[in-house]
Amino acid sequence: MNIITKTDTADQHWSKIWDEIEEGSKWLTPEADVKRWAEELAAGAAILDLGAGVGRHALSLQAAGFELTALDAAPEGLAEIDKAGIGVKTTLGRMDDLPFEDGAFDHVLSWNVIYHGDETVLLNTISEVRRVLKPGGTFMLTMLSKRRLWIDREKLNEPREISRNTWVFDEDGSDKRHPHYYCGAVEMLALFQGFEVMWMEDREHEKPGSWHWHLILERQA
Image 1: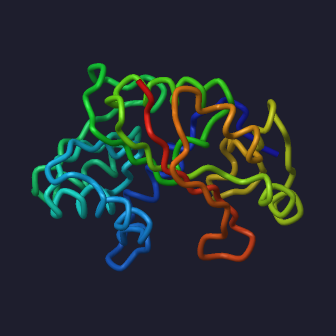
Image 2: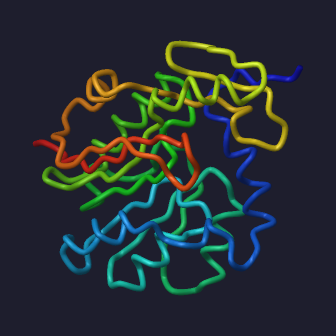
């Protein structure tokens, strides 16, 4: 058994995925929720795509007239964004230590990213998002739902809770070998101090049992 217990290590998995990305991959298609969110934003707004991967959202939003900065800890994904050559600024960095000035962005997007770590990493990331986001700006994100946890514990090998709400599984070839944070509604809302909830929904993604929280938050002054 080779279970990873260090937190915030999922980029090790995704680096390999991005290095072998193929045309037609689902990771190249923007999410409908993100498109709807963007329709309500002011033209030309500065947006941080936090954990941008290969840029499925950053490239789409840049093409729609926004000013995008894509941050990721996996350089292979950022290289794919740079290849597009449409002006997205790419930055290699960690989500819990953002290399940007206070209030640098009008909005922040983080799709299926910030739950990759323990509660300390998560809280530090939320604090950093609040710092770089202008008051009144929105934060669109997803979080892993506890409704999914019992399913993953039944389905995946060697479930182990390494700290509160943070689980790893002995699954070769899966990012579940790396720490994932699961939470219920009350626990989740307690994490986001300094934000007001504008939209919140717990639903499945493309696979049965793949429950995620979907949120749009507003940064309070």
